[in-house]
Length: 324
Image 1 (cartoon, rainbow, N blue to C red):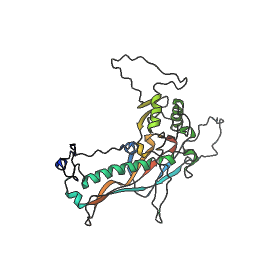
Image 2: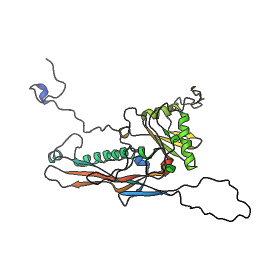
Image 3: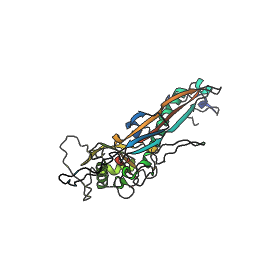
């Protein structure tokens, strides 16, 4: 006679009274990091449309002035000033637990507090996905929600139309398609340097396929394609090949993992943003928080929400990788 090795609540027999082995824990398996949101400086918004000014210096001149010449013309010192702006973007997640579920004893907490905490994590990922999105800004109204312009649209060499050409991202800072090499990465870093004139610390938020390519830069020569070799004098046999910090002639780049669930391209997994932290920030009109709503009889419920926008102080300071 065969004996059941688990509990059986439907069939008569010895297994009917076997105890279940259900652990008091629930595993949540999903990427939850938000590198762009977490690393951005924050500021308080006071309106639904946030604006800021940009300016630049005139090109250097070596034109000589004749001895004894009088000044006859005066330049407008602020002729290059322009105004950029972005609309706020409202996001929320709702949660509810039935009154009966709240009352019963379950394996692993499935109460209103855990539901609230889970939705806060989901909302932070929503904000991250919106920040790095390719959507354009929209004012909203007439039944439509306002939307912020995402990094994918700010970092563009041909637009957006409201960004003057002098402040758009140089095409050399954008890699659209084709093999992504160390030479190309260095070219993007140099392009960003030529805009700011300073060798600054940059951050490359890279999806998994792009991150693997960059890791290969530590072991393959970008010019000859030959494998690089080095002597390891340490007693440890471990050789690290994952590039976390990339040092170039025009800046140091910290390479961090993009949240793969927030990426704009979830098929090829090869997108990335080269960001200068000094020239972008996240404004918050309503900070991320939670509100409990009235229980109408079905059980406790509530929502978590956030309203804010992305400020890209100078689109030309950044770059992006669209495909490799």
